[in-house]
Amino acid sequence: MKPIWIVDDDESIRWVLEKALARESLATRSFANAREAIAALESETPQVLVSDIRMPGDSGLDLLQRVKARYPGLPVIIITAFSDLDSAVAAFQGGAFEYLAKPFDIDKAVELIRRALDESLREASVEAGPADTPEILGQAPAMQEVFRAIGRLSQSNVTVLITGESGTGKELVARALHKHSPRAAQPFIALNTAAIPKDLLESELFGHERGAFTGAQATRRGRFEQAENGTLFLDEIGDMPFDLQTRLLRVLSDGHFYRVGGHQPLKANVRVITATHQNLEQRVRDGLFREDLYHRLNVIRLRLPSLRERREDIPLLVRHFLLQSARQLGVEAKRMSEPTLAFLSSLDLPGNVRQLENLCNWITVMAPGQTVEVKDLPLELSQGKESMGQGGVLEPAASAGLALAAGAAGAAGGQAAAGVVGQAHLPDGWLGLLEQEAAAMLAANQPEVMAVLGRQFESALIRMALRHTHGRKNDAAVRLGIGRNTITRKIAELGIAGARED
Image (cartoon, rainbow, N blue to C red; front, top):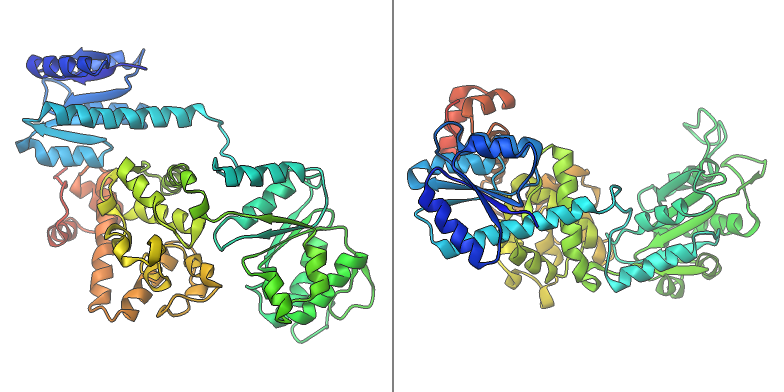
């Protein structure tokens, strides 16, 4: 392990930290100014950097900027006097791991350095891993069984039925089955049968001839033709209309189909993989699903575990989704404190992996600091399990207010959350999350919904801009396309700390 660097022009501060860390068997290296540390960075790097903010010559902020430009994953702790608190907040927004306000308690300082050290070692282990992110993440025994099944099926063309709750990653598994099959070089075509209106689904699957129906102005290839020699993934197969089930059974039985309005049989050389979150056996008993089609599809069944069956994977998934979200937004990835990871791992998230991913997207945009504590989570989570159902399972109405996955309600059989209008038809991305939050507030008859959400939206934009400009208020205004007087007024109204003049 590399040493911890201490940068401070005050010899007594350096001495105290050196002795305290030595008692913890932690190696250190000290510098009297930022210039010496910057020069040393040309040939080596620390595990953690602790720096004073005010020093002769280059300041701690200058050092922070240099370090983050070259080593964005290196934790930097800033030491500041109480009068430098605004600068410390600006440093925090610029990427500092945390700050120590003078005078500080030495035990708390060591505890903070330990936390930064743990984070640094985690970052190093991630960087030392494979360059390509695995298509499916999971270390839990239940997921290892899934991986083994994919491996056993890798050279097979057999039909597979994937079952599991909404948000467990059924399409990812279907893609993995295709990727590792002899058909990998051919097309992978996915279709959610529940998302296509009944009167269009037949044409979507099998295509149509010109003039087959009103609006059919040209011949159209269906998904079976598009997937020729490859794989066709039919999601939510349990929702397929009964009459179309007959047509699908015929294709699976004899390998031929007709376009809508067509008279010439077409041959289908396609591997079919299906998925559902429903109990197909029960739907067969209820007369909603053909028994002969069920047996044709259920050649190999692959069940995906829910997230509550693989809690040990939650920290791994959280770190992956936070990194992914940060890359998409072009910002530094947030970190989860250990108590926050433990808290999340104790929840029975009904939206499963999809809900966890959307929570991480929310955290990247909305959480105030780089290290996320339990109090920084959405209120319905951070207020504790008393706002949840038995055993920590989020009730549908509660999960709607999280502004998380629209698919969370799917775990209750595809029904929309109580009081939420049109949740199943929300747009993807942050607009869908915004609409979901607004719907929950309106259903709860909360007052001034526009004002509340407007303030949160403005606050998030301004905080993010200040983070990108290291607290420079005027520069942030230019980046946001608003006037200097406007951002000054908004910062005061919204109570945003850490802004300073350019």
